[in-house]
Figure 1 (cartoon, rainbow, N blue to C red):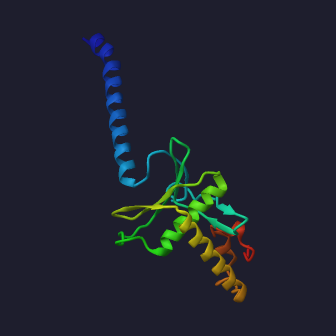
Figure 2: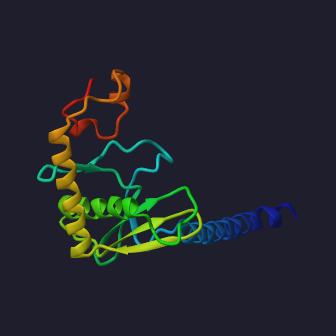
Figure 3: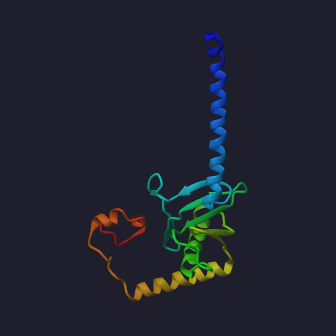
Length: 180
């Protein structure tokens, strides 16, 4: 009897592990669907879930930096930026959030050489796919020009005098006014 149980134990263990692996695989697919991320491989994350991401996307040409929450590379090589918002979705995405997503699209194109056809704004209850059109890019570039013109007219000092805040800042590497 003990020989029979001993010889059956490996089979039971293998079946249990196979069942567990299948259950985890299905749960992973379910969680991926709930996350709002498009199909593909996550190649960049700045959600802070495991550790802070020190990689900042930047454009020296435009003097622009950014850290999208996710970049997802699809099978065809397309890279989709995803920005997670903790609030409930408005009826339509806010202009500032659309322009933030457009900035990430532009940074993806400059850093990876691939123009995203769209980006995703993922709210707590709903997602919006925002087309990255030539018009949206032009609006973003106009806004950046306006911001630079305003800065040249009024060049404020940092709003603090605490070097430790600069050390923790996500855009520290690109800042010409950092204190540390």
